[in-house]
Length: 297
Picture 1 (cartoon, rainbow, N blue to C red):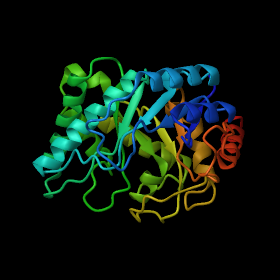
Picture 2: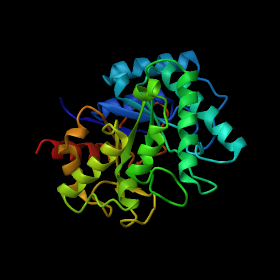
Picture 3: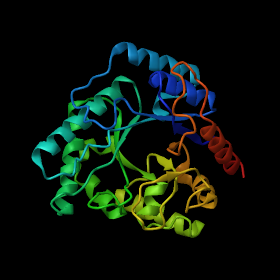
Picture 4: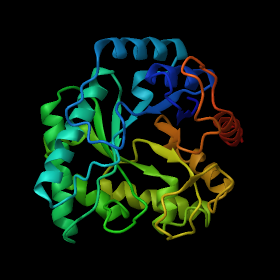
């Protein structure tokens, strides 16, 4: 099967327009927000008419719902030791899963947050508890996936061990509905040198798979503005950052990149696109051409 390449497209005009822009850009995968990502969204449901428009746009774009990823709000700190903040993050994650499930989408990814208080083992248990709450609250098949982080401050998820630690605290009965994904910029910024060699990249992926007990369920394909180990979460177009193009060719050739969403979160050229304009972003078109060329080699 061809690789499932997509992007987090601009959603001016609604998430249905994001889907149409992805389809017009030749994508077979997609990432969206279901609410404003700078707010908890812990009380925000999704309107039925919005669901129907999105499903119709996906069908028109020939993108399968199981190849779509929802990215949760950035402010959800499920690792926090502040009970009020943790509670809102827990409820926000459950609402994210509710909206994602209503849309019929296959997976929801989220940043686990920061281990405030400094006890990383306790923070891992809090993350698992929040995921467990979401999965028990919202029935269905949609999965909740932890995203690795760039490692700034006290953020969780910078190492294979931390990903494994959060997942091992999940109840066995819910384990199939969770997992993790990897962001290339975050890997590099956290000190994992995926640009060193194909063997080095393979070893890094092996380490995460071994610690988590399963391979990644998605990849975010982003070059890095920051240097190796900088802990800077600053995305760049592939080939224009410190990682460089070659590492992405190695990743696309890896068996773990097959049949999982491969999502660009790279800069967009036109954030001011009209609400009714379904034209794909020129930068997305450029990146898709580059990735498809790499995959064909």
